Length: 162
Image 1 (cartoon, one colour):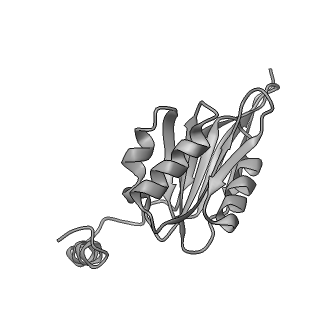
Image 2: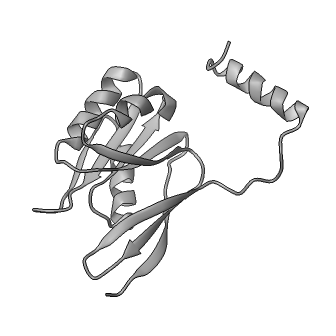
């Protein structure tokens, strides 16, 4: 068996967040669409899912054609089956993440981020699979009192804390 690993750079359009995960059933794209549309109605989004058997198609849903196309491009670059990609605009992953995790066919979430992202994939003679992600950059230090105050102020400014 030949085993190789690869890092795949993911394209996240400006102003967007991505949720990348693993799932297992053809109805995933529709279910994720319904979750996002009913949880955050003002969100603009794309959803794509890669089948791992049968016709092995990339299935798509969403309400923003640019984001749907970006999801497809990312999944083509990853090249693994049973992976889903959600790109969100005008919403944050925190708004939908619990509902996505509770979707019966979702097996795991690899990341939810707006940071630069690379997906580490392995390839064998059978195909490609996701090993994990590299989300953003390594730590540069430990926050100071001033940093803590800025973090707390930011969370209140965007409405996530009172």
